[in-house]
Length: 512
Image 1 (tube, helix red, strand yellow):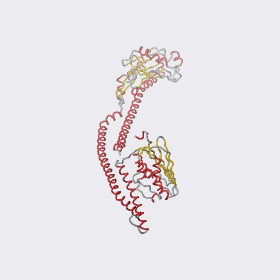
Image 2 (cartoon, helix red, strand yellow):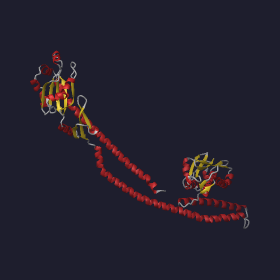
Image 3 (spheres, helix red, strand yellow):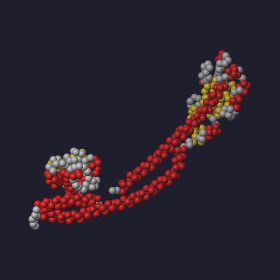
């Protein structure tokens, strides 16, 4: 087992967790920044829109008045205008100028408290067009408009309303002769006012630009014709980004701690892995040595038992004695097969199993394996058939035969009397497939996983009657891997088991 492949999932999980945490923080910070930016934009839009709206309300209050109709439309009383509506300019902080304009666009009255462009500049700059664009009022319905206008490089907020009769006096005929003048209140949107607006809403760097800046922190100021004349910009608070910048140092310290902890874990895990690997090899070496030591006297016991059964050196009296000799020989052979399996698996675990790959005739190997198993099949009246097409394999004949014998032994063991075992061999997609199929008790998917594990034995009412170490299928699986072949098993409880082996053909690239 590769140590790096063993710990890789741990590192992937830790890295994925860190990446997920960082991603969540970044997304949360981004959402917080976006929410703050949207809130700032809405506040600025509301403040910018509120100024001309308030001027429009003021203009309508002064224009929708019978006294204004008498003194502005009919008499053009400058003194009245100066003492009445002109006081609004000096008395209200947010108003910087006032214009009274005839329907033809000529000036009636003006009053300024700030250094604004001259009245004729304002009229030529757009207010004359504004007054002319106002629709003819309907009876008892005020006509007003508010917005922004750029005049002589200054951005001005305005509110305009036509002077109209409220209906308390019968002046409609007189007004119709003179038309409807307009009262226009003006406020200069200066840098100072913008700074005060930003300070009131905790917005930094609120200012005007002649051209668009960053798309996310720029709002256009639209004049009454629908054209953008200036652009508002500001420094967004970006609370999410500020939070991330404050978290950088703690996050770096935490990441360093995680790296140091993972490094220590790696050292300890590597040391433990090496110790376990050494212990596993020592166990395998011990099993191999012990199995070898046991096999030597066991072969002697089997040999002497065989000699006694042949009665070469004297007759064995009594049927019971002959029966006991047969039982001793059968038990010894069974024990020897178990020891051989343990020795093989020990060599495989210790990576000391040598293979000798060469050209192999699969038909001969199948015939030889079936002959060994035929006697066991005959005892249970199991039909054993084989159909193999000729081919040349590149494999170790001894191991290949052992694999087939293991599979056939299992098939005979777990197939009820009168059943069938079929062995077939065909060339499929550049490999030679040997298929061993039986009509035995079958296994579930969980049983297959257990049977493929070392010393794993499937428990069942039929299987309990058969002894074994549980090394048959694990040996087959490891032998096929050692030979560079394929191994697949499928089974259905009550219907049987099918094992498919794929061997490289002689002379193909699999040979390497």
